Length: 62
Image 1 (tube, rainbow, N blue to C red):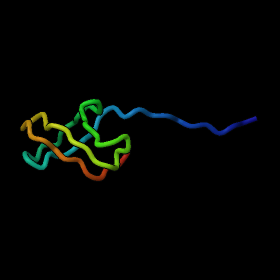
Image 2 (image 1 turned 90 degrees about the horizontal axis):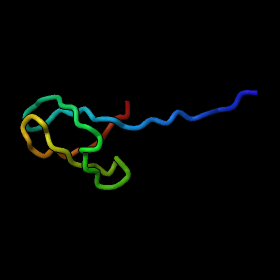
Image 3 (image 1 turned 45 degrees about the vertical axis):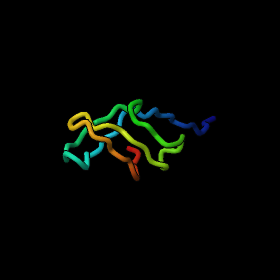
Image 4 (image 1 turned 180 degrees about the horizontal axis):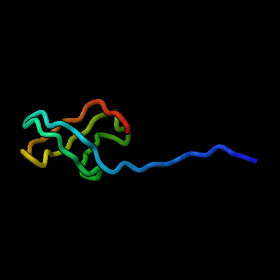
């Protein structure tokens, strides 16, 4: 007998283009400050290249 199942994934990092310096950067997920437990509410992180704050908007889950 077969049964349905769920694959659970844990976010590791985000890729984002910094609006200040234009670099494509990878930010570890634990270094992103989300406004709530719902990622769609937005959040903040710091660009590792230019050290400026990046405000996060919409996202895609890959």
